[in-house]
Length: 220
Image (cartoon, rainbow, N blue to C red; front, side, top):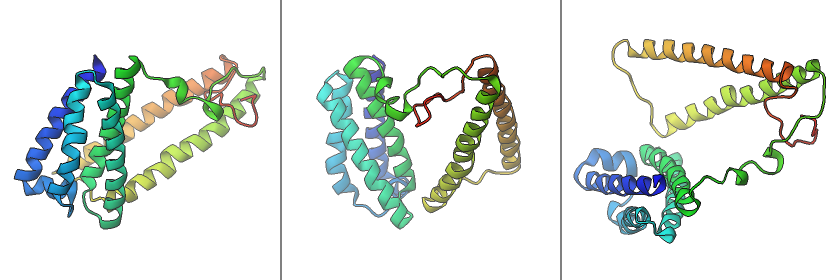
């Protein structure tokens, strides 16, 4: 039911968006840039709006067609927005739509999310081999350096570059920017403290590490 409900909402949202594209220049420029809306609509309305509506009626081929088309549009808009600095909001919106469509298609097809297809190979979890708390803590520290470095260093830098290129920056009025920074710092400190406490608990009392992945060293 959740998957079908998502497709119903997506069909309605897609129809409203196309109405906005043809009536409001601001929406057309923000989401399509210089692309021909008539040409795009000729493909997107049947393959996204109509197909989402059919998927809401539990037509499985329509669900997968919507997901596939969303992925193709996302790739095209990402390349277009990066090359031209236009249609950034369209690329961002379609990234969300692709994730939602794929998730909803699985829910319509199987009634569940097949997480086993994601956590496989080197990403599959396993029981940690017996090790001392000190050794687990050392491995946990290495994981923190790598994962936090990627999540809090590399990823934000890439996002900032894309945000500027796609012209997605939002200017907050008045003193709202300061409050957002304060809230961000507060959430970062609280979340970091929780993460470190969890890592310490896993290392000392859980007899393992937070990320027991199947790397070359299977003892993780």
